[in-house]
Amino acid sequence: MKRILLLAGLVFLISPACKEKKSTPVKEVIPEVVVNTPQEAPVQKQEPIAPPAEAKPDKYFLVAGSFLKQENAEKCKSDWTQKGYQSQVVTRSPGVNSDFFRVSYMSFSDRKEAINAMQQERAMEGKEQVWVLVKK
Image (cartoon, rainbow, N blue to C red):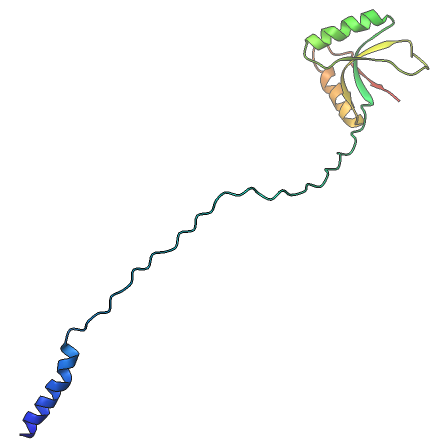
């Protein structure tokens, strides 16, 4: 009889555990959607840009020809311009040889660059007589 009571007690304890549990309804959670509307970017004040350091003016010129008459210098200049160079007629301030009009087709602010360019140009056919004019 003890066994029956023990067995009945166990069944009594186990039976509620085996029952189907009623589930509570789960609320469906819908994530909130946030729509960002485009906004204008805040206007930022720009600091004034400092002007670049002034470039040194060209002082060294590769000279293709030197002429007493300006009209001859202008003709030579146009020939070099047609070849694709930025040629110019260079005159010097009063002094020795200031009466000549020189036609330059390259100019430099750096002496070493001018000398290197002159050496390269002299190696080319037809440019053996190129020289550097230093304008003060």
